[in-house]
Image 1 (cartoon, rainbow, N blue to C red):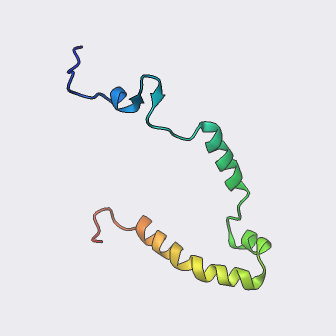
Image 2 (cartoon, rainbow, N blue to C red):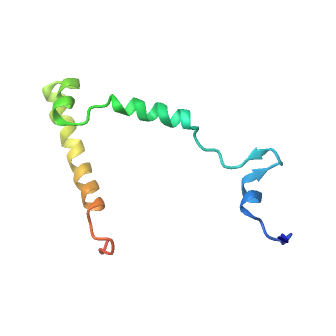
Length: 83
């Protein structure tokens, strides 16, 4: 297949100096480490209460509740809804 000299193909866009990729992404090992690390995070109200005092839990929930409401609205709105 002939290659147009004036056209940069995907490989040409990703390789710099014949030996180095321009695009660098995290390795699968780093991704696995992140996923394993998140398994230990609290995931419900009961497990959150184990990590925080009652006062800290209520302060934290005051900050997180609006964020979760906005996230829920974004995730569950119809695909062609007005912004």
